[in-house]
Amino acid sequence: MRASIDTHRSRSRHLARTKWLRSHNSFSFGAHSVSDNTHFGLLLVSNEDTVKPGTGFDTHPHRDMEIVTWVLEGALVHKDSTGHNGIIYPGLAQRMTAGSGILPHTANVTPGYEQLDINAPLDQGGWVTLASGMSKHSSARAITIRQKHAALHVARLRPAETVQAATAPFVHLFVAHGTISLEDSDALTQGDAARITGSEGQRISAGPDGAEVLMWEMDTTLSFR
Image (cartoon, rainbow, N blue to C red; front, side, top):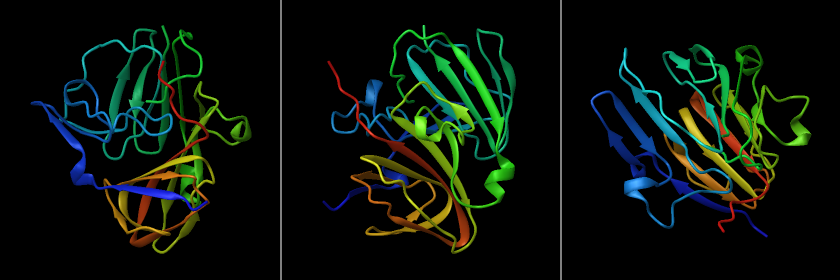
């Protein structure tokens, strides 16, 4: 069975604005909910946020979510109600568990926090497993998420460098920087995404200026009761 590739361009994302925030939302929710764009696989939220310097999100609650933050430019200060705080910068993988992005496979888990700098392996090329709950990535993942059916990988590709997408029922690719060509599909540029159902390990090639790509690998989808 041939893989199905659904391309979503950067310009098609909903843009939410405030005085201090520009948030490009890949999936719909809340006031701008659209019934046919609520999730893909287990991925419920994929936002690209630009925050005005010296500002940020006030303290606010989350419940039963695994939230992975990946900084593209600049730095963010993180503080939470469990006492964790620090600075997040490009190449630092960070996960916050809001128990009591990706939904955990068990509800009401204890809140948690984890981070790790992965710049060194990223500079070596190819995929680096940023976050995973899958057992097959247990020895390679940077940080853990409480979702046994999902993993997030990232690659900083040199010009013309080639990698393969994961072979999985659901794969979500997001181009954070640069451009890529994707086998069996059109070229993708910064902010574009591809939702691949029945992925067969499609070849991904970076453009002339290289690329940074985020890839969610998921072996199931959300079921709503």
